[in-house]
Length: 115
Image (cartoon, rainbow, N blue to C red; front, side, top):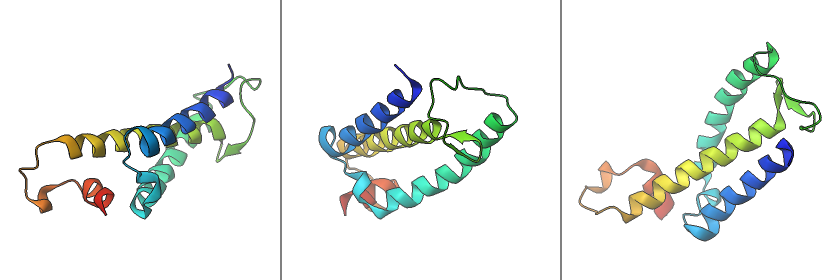
């Protein structure tokens, strides 16, 4: 299975976990996309350096060859999937935790997901 196919499957799985399995629906909130843009900015810097130097190299037969600042598009897809799954689980677990804390003590993503 190619790296490209795995990256696409990771994005589909992350979206399914968010929208269908856990029902957090973070992908439907503007706050998620703002947070993801910040993460993506730094991912492009760090991963772009690692792949551009080249500290990390890829078999050209396993990737599309499309790059963003030296970073294969597959890395962007995997990064998106990892951020999405992490935040989905964080919000879902936060909703399941006992609600003893005051509202202002909640993580911002939990408050945003309730809106």
